[in-house]
Length: 332
Image (tube, rainbow, N blue to C red):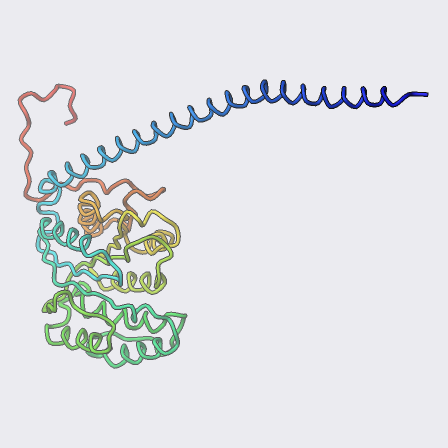
């Protein structure tokens, strides 16, 4: 028979072994765990420092590139759009500074900016009431604008499609003489009175343009009115000379579910997705030039899958004087 002292000694031995195991295990294992965690922390800090440095280097590189583009803009733009007339159409929420930069580049390329039309949010609404109102407005102005509208409304944005056709016809010449100042004013005034648009700084448009730039909303996705703006881009393209319409957006356009991305999927007009930079503003003028030269609409900028930039087009008035130090291996 096993006496009580044996049980007591056994129990004490078990607890003692457990205690010793905990002490030894915690000391050995904690040291190893701390070592692993310390190494992981060191690697994470190193990777973070590397990424911070890379970001700083890329920012400096981008700043330098944009400074170069701005300095080189006279050579790249002079004579590019001489005697052309360009109208700007801004979507609700467009970046005003980007629009101003694009306008400056167009003027530097020799174009005349005939006006800046700013759409209101009501133009993008797709409810039944807005569709009916825009359809009626378009029908009432069709004769003045010199366009024929479909008798049967089709599609979820049929009102905007009809209104876009009338609006585009009033802003662009379509390869002909275009509307006179009185008819342009009549169309735009009615759209303005009904709350669908306004002209920047209360200006007026007295002559039709040959080309158009549609400025997409600023900010990231989702962007409202994408389907409407794509339809408007098509209307502007059809009314411009040589399909001369470019849709532009800021660097935030490099995301999914935005207007620029939607247009790139259908390839109906040229797009520039970084028009908030000097490089993108030069691209805008270049893209218009390529369309005038009969090239198909292209997508330019930094979105994956687009061309980095249009091929430089020699300006009509610029000349290049060869350097006496040019290497014999230089391109001729």
